[in-house]
Image 1 (spheres, chains in turn purple, green):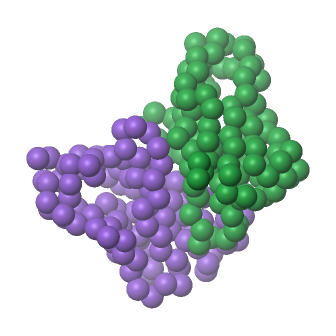
Image 2: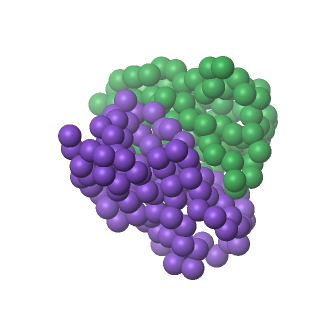
Length: 115
Length: 114
């Protein structure tokens, strides 16, 4: 079974609008962390935001926020006020405390921001 | 700080050749990882190391070898390159080994095997 599922292969958003990128995960571990990375066309992997399984509040980092719904096992990334530079691949990933803390990635979502 | 540095950036190999992808980090991190990313896909773990002298297999280790003689360096060796190893390879590191710590990635090595 997939540990991390990103169901949106590609998405368009109008510049200055908000967009939500979906991520669901599968774990029986109580202690785990969820991460979002951005991969622009230049190829590097850029860490955006982190949410811990015990965190009661949703994580926020500037224009990025994480909509964490633990019971539904979802950790959606919300980007507010989209900019042209947000066009990139976005990966959701998870580290599980009882699985050697390996970082497991989803398949990614390609976001394209329209001017 | 340089962070995680990978060399080379690009390489073309013929089938059956071998090569070593270099990775070095200057953050004194104990934990280092090698991932591969096939076109349009997420990253898959090849090998990882929790400290100098200790390495272990990830999800897709076949066709690769690693060593970790120092904290800073974690080279990935390809023996008998095959077209299936055409991919982008990422090295990463982090310091704690805990689930709440993000990995720091190098810029990747794009490898083509023909």
